[in-house]
Length: 257
Image (cartoon, rainbow, N blue to C red; front, side, top):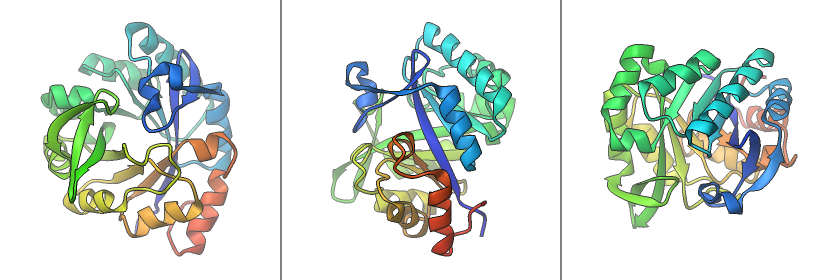
């Protein structure tokens, strides 16, 4: 079995890391300032994070320039893979982030609006560089719908079906964000995570709901995720990356120590 990954996520607004609850990141007024992204990245690098995800919640031309600067500064000092998402709407945007030092780019609303962007990115940079992030919400028993625009706009698409289509277009990884669980610390959505993990042939990163060490183990074992992504529990010092990995290893889950 391949080693499971532990990935801190940093939401960046105007060059600072912030955190909201249940996609509060979509409304800047609801965000709580956490700190400097480079300092946090260095902390997680030292703790042994397998990767780092940066999400640009400014999503504007000004914000993109700020994010490029953040990625350049982090890439100079950290040696873990970096993924960047938010406001990436064209192949040129992807190229700017990859040139700045990112290893992967994550697209969400832009992929929904223009699915061929997935193919174009994969053809130019390789599928390993293209991550499709899916914001899913349970809308009926057994049905999870994809939402766009920071979890605010329903698309009518069924989550697992969209994941399969994205992979068919060239996505090399899926990040599954549970809108219901995001920021609640009540646990990951195991059902939809397992459904998507079993339906695609690429790694699935589980996001939304991490509150306890047990939640991490559950989504990797029962949800069959390949990696766990978390923000608040790391940013506010509840757990370190090492503590998560030691716990997972104790459960027989392979991790890089």
